[in-house]
Image (cartoon, rainbow, N blue to C red; front, side, top):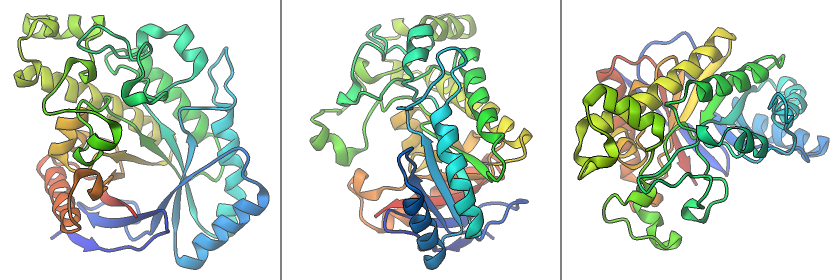
Length: 331
């Protein structure tokens, strides 16, 4: 029997736990996401962690790589900004007995030196345009690594290993482990000025040479030649499986380093597969998965939070995935 516990967190986000399967990690925790910055003073860190302790927050997921690193070594790509943010937070987390997890952007990477050194690693849409050359949804940070390139996975593993070296860090949390939004959540269409009544080539990824060649090798056709790519089950599954493999391989390194592995994923399994080509029920090697059930983004009322959460629990069970599910709410 699966257990449902409502957990109150901070003024930023609410996280509620659905325990999907047995696990060696502690399931009864109150979590909060927080944006970390290099300019956070000692006073700010003291205030934040003391308030977390006061309201009962037991685990903090601190954003340290937000796709805009302030310091990045141009030779090794070592993300010095992310490392410094976490190192500075560790003493305060330890002081107040709070688990600290490093929140890392994953496929969504905009490092200047990386873009210049390896533009071929980035995703290409069905119009043949690299995401480096267009500003999707008018978002400068929408620059996405392609999971068909093994080098991209190795790059992300290196970022994980850097973070895992920090003494006192409990875990690593992967965000943006997906494709760009082929369709935005429905409640955002008007504010972003888009019409997405169907899948349009501009937002449909990835059609890079590697993806096309690998798919053709498997199925005998170049996906760019498909009359309706969205109706091709094999092409959809190809992308779901590529992203699931990348996520699972990176999470395996987190576990090898002795850290708790977690990821933020889209709201419900079916919506996630449709909107961002993310089959997170088949993300392996994770202790926790955090569906971002931001119901207002989908023009849904409050009861949909429970509906989406139950769908997630059921999908994990059907896939034989032992990850624990934590529902993330935007409040």
